[in-house]
Length: 217
Ligand code: DX5
Ligand code: ZN
Image 1 (spheres, rainbow, N blue to C red):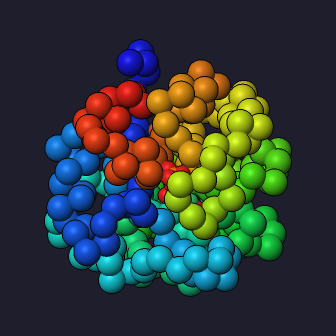
Image 2 (tube, helix red, strand yellow):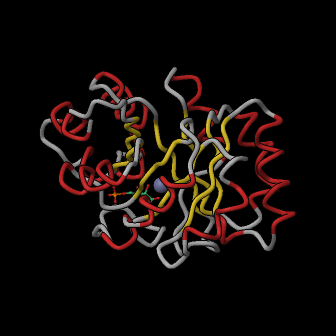
């Protein structure tokens, strides 16, 4: 177990969507800190998952922070609905917006609802693009797979970006990693300086979920 507190955010993309309440309680009872909700629109990524009404329903059945990962085009349009539905952290993709002004405006909008703002980069995006935003956001999310699907293999070269981000980050910045995380890959990320791990298939595919979550801490 690390000295530093690691925020574990199981991704419900690997849960049973017909039993979301059961599967959220399961990870809640096993020590999850946040619940990671993957929102995909079929445009920014090839897959379609869940949206605002599901977040609204999840808000009623858990007190854990809802960590909503927006893999969508035009995230600006959906900040208010997701914030009002009960998201606690809203993370959008750098690649989904066109310029500095648009990005600043989305960050401001998220913060205007009193919730945390996160910015994410896909595997091919260099971490330097985040330089103007490190002091504006609460969290940076480094993708270690191409966003769109659970159960893919961890890309270790993407995890190297954490080292750069760490040199730029203030103490309070959360550095989250998402994609192919298990006990081994999670350790690589923590050693580079990540302090939040998302894990879908590793947690929900485990025979012993508590042991899986503990192994990420
Ligand atoms: C992928 C999603 C991830 C996904 C991770 O686009 O953003 O959150 O659920 O799944 P695993 O942990 O199975 O790689
Ligand atoms: Zn995700």
